[in-house]
Structures are given as C-alpha cells and as structure tokens.
Image (tube, rainbow, N blue to C red; front, top):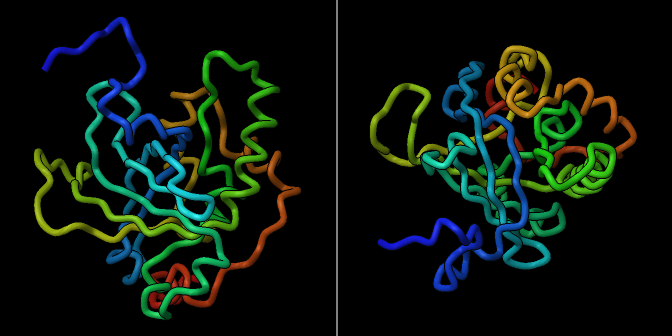
Amino acid sequence: MPHNDQDSAPNPEFLPLHNICEFLTAVHIYTEEARQGKTRSVPATHYCSHVSKDLRQCLIYDSAKKDARLIGVEYMVPRHVYETFDPEEQKLWHSHEYEVSSGMLICPKPSSFEPDEWEKAELEAMKEIMGLYGKTWHFWQVDRGDKYPFGMPTLMGSMTEPHQGSLDELMAERNAEYGVHHSDKAKRREGIEKPGIHVNGDSWWKEAGKM
C-alpha cells in the first residue's frame, strides 16, 4: 500500500489513530503466574487515546520501534466507573497505584520539550493515572520467543508491591533507552496522593497471598 514517508501524520483514512495522544511505557505481568505467586513480566509500550472522559484505550506494542509488534490492548477507567462493575468483572482489572508511585510507568519525553517542562507535564498525567483501573489482554507472548500470536489471549496485570520483582532489573533496559531512572521518578511522585486499591482489584496477587 502506498505510503508518504514525508508526512508523519496518520493518513486521513486512519481516523481512530488520529486520537492517540499518550505514550506510556511500563511492564505487564502475566496473571496466571501471579496467582501462583510468581512474577513473569514483559515490556509494554502503550499508545493511548481517550474514547471519552472516563475511558481510555491503548494499543500495546513490544517496543517503540518502527517494526514493533502489536501484542495487546488495555482499557482504563477511573475508580467511580470501576465501582459500577459487577464484582466478578472487577477482578479482571488492575490498579495503577504502584506503577505510578514506583516510577515503573513513565511518559517518555518528546524531543520538542525541555526536561523540566516535561517533568511537570508528566507529573500531572501521573496524578490522574494513579487512580485508574486497567483491563489488559495480550495476544502475543513475545517474551517466550513466539514468532506469531499463538493461543488464547492472556489476561495481564501489574506489580503492586516491591517484593514482587526487582525494578532495578526489570527497568534497566527501559531506563537506559529513555535516559531516566525509576527511582528518580518515584521521588518526584512522592507527593501524589494514593487513593487506595479496591478490594477486588489485582485479584491474582490476593489469591496468591502476595498483597
């Protein structure tokens, strides 16, 4: 299909892509392993759009490179929406409190912004994300070397406690790629109020007795 490399904007026909306005990176964990008290994770690069004030949808890739593989999707809602869900539905969603407070989740700085300017913008974004709940499905287990998206979709979540995995190890490659460090991000975010996690959120860790 013809493509104009001189125009970096999405083609006019690709309307849903025009709404992508947020670029996030973190790691996702496999919930089946988490239920057994184990942490198996994979880097997750998010490109998100706001469907409405109370709903975000994100395309999840294995990197931010041009040839990145689409490995999943994530939906995010604020707590007041999450609380309207059936209790069994709530158990499929994960919190973002630790992702934000630990510095695991970042918005990589665009080249057009100065560092201090972007830190302020990112901090404001994290204040909102802190209280969101996400439902995430991955279709492609690239971390085990799958060449294609085999098998059924896998429900994913996030770490919620420091003992679930070493961020120094998990974030090393990401930190180096974007010239950041999760501990610096965590320090900057110490003033963000933690809303607390709903009793049904992150259900896999609770089943394993890891929360």
